[in-house]
Length: 96
Image 1 (cartoon, helix red, strand yellow):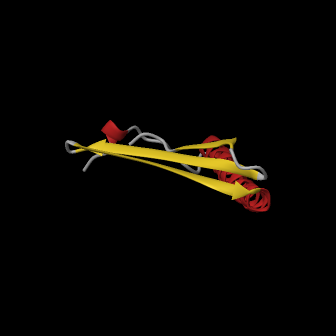
Image 2 (spheres, rainbow, N blue to C red):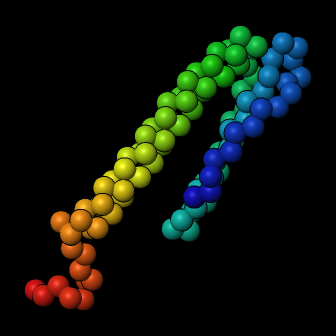
């Protein structure tokens, strides 16, 4: 499946902008493609942009929090290994 595309284009109607979304998928011998174009008023486009900005900020914060958590976890693990409280054994040495 190809990544969906979103484009903002100039509308032919005054006071509007065009939003075009395209997506396609293929597999099992079947190809599907869809394109949707919508004329938005300036107010609707501004409201959509504001909502998108909020969602982008929330997702950016989530990604950063996850990266910070992984960095803290890795630092803790390295400290525990250095202190001798955790021993790292290669996979092939584990007896079953």
